[in-house]
Image (cartoon, rainbow over all chains, first blue to last red; front, side, top):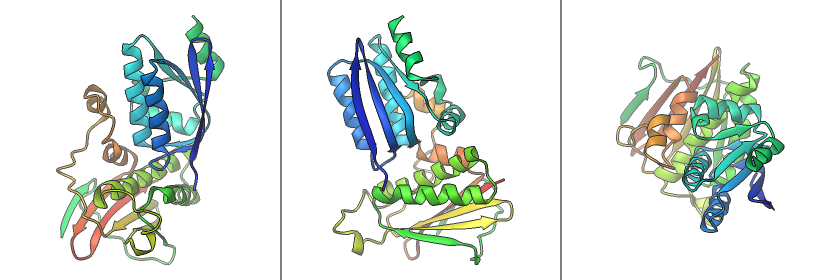
Length: 115
Length: 161
């Protein structure tokens, strides 16, 4: 079975979550717990490094949409970096690129937070 | 038996064929990755590109997740796996695509009652769950659901090339 490891890295004024594996119903609670912890600490500037993310389910997409919305309401943001072509096409086909910001790589995401 | 359909209402049930591949897994989320890998590999073998195979993979994953969450009311424990009726997933190569039949012996669910939300409605209503059926409806050409208290429930998903 594939799970997902989530490694958290704090940089300057934002956090990076490095995702490795599959975010499905089996591993969803890890993501939910991590996002809840960030929210509880009022950490609203987050980059997801999706370079090693193999799969994302509807529940995980829903959690990311909810976090992004709340983060923006608190003058923060969430950016998804280095998303694979397959996952990017799924997000775009579902119309969720309207609310989830996709950027090419982590450097692009972090420099936009520095602006 | 109740039968509910999204897609081509004239589509006939699929006959069992020698190229079919059937998995039986416990009603637990821990086995979803195996099912997804099979869905992707078989879709690629049928001639789908990586993007369309990924859509079929996601539709099958969401259907299995729905069964565990709604038809069985949650995942079974590791200890109860041997006695749990579980989920059967039958993959059927078609001349012009691929189909998957996902069967269970849980309570089932009502397509009409569990109304399919779309992406705009989902975003506007600030939901965070309930996207599964929308994703399935977007990523396959036909989905049909049969609910029977005697023979169990089956969702059939068909994706064409």
